[in-house]
Image 1 (cartoon, one colour):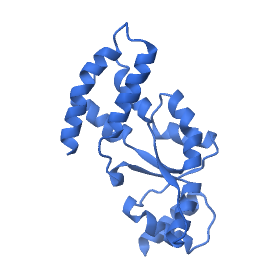
Image 2 (image 1 turned 90 degrees about the horizontal axis):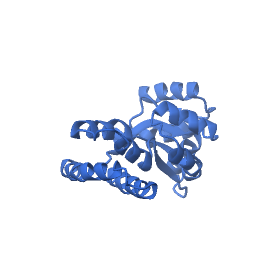
Image 3 (image 1 turned 180 degrees about the vertical axis):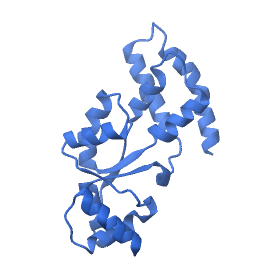
Length: 192
């Protein structure tokens, strides 16, 4: 299924790339093309376990801890892509030559599909950064999130399918939220 969808997207990409880069294409048209291609890129399947960067905000982690320990709670977390739809499209289109299928696939797998967990409110704070900045690295994302009062943690060693169990484990053990304390809790969790 992924292969077929990717092939269809790539077949559309080449003529769109040519139209986007024509001199007569207006900025309004370019913006529309970016929105349309960006949406198409993000409709490709994103296996969650392979796309999560192991980054989660403090508030999203707290929400998930409450969610897994209280059946009435709602975690209200969202996937915030490190590289937004529009940015992914700009990076794909704003070039002198189109990506080869291999280059396009590589960028999708290593950049475009990657996400962090944040709350809905934090996601809204980061929207303007996504729209105004063409940077797409995890380091840039972490810095910008920090500038917008969103504290992020790296949960290295926790697989996506272990996230709820890890949050239950954290909920049973009081601790202060720091990266060092989380690293210690990850080690304790892995030993159990």
